[in-house]
Length: 110
Image (cartoon, rainbow, N blue to C red; front, side):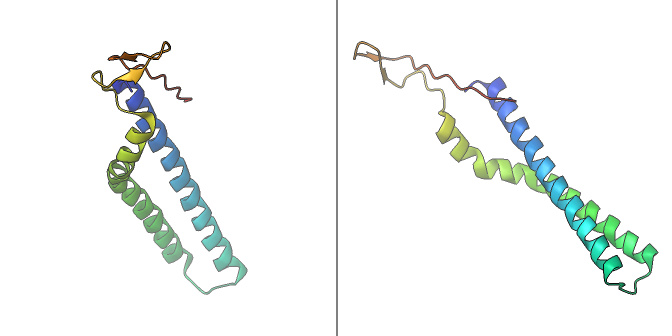
């Protein structure tokens, strides 16, 4: 896999993780807001809003701090799946012989 394709793959993964974390964050905040209002929990709304903003900022901070570790954790499995370019590796050719050149096509939909 070329460096350019790998960067596109990593960027796509990071973008999708970000979307997932943001979706979870928004849904948690909405659910908490609905729960407090529906159950008429006696809480000062200024304090409640400050807690909600702090929670949202914490989620974003932990996401940004954790994305590099996430990439490191999945790198080995991704490399194994897409294959690493190794020009000395021999692979069978159409006529049954071997070739020192390995060609592998990888399609990435972004």
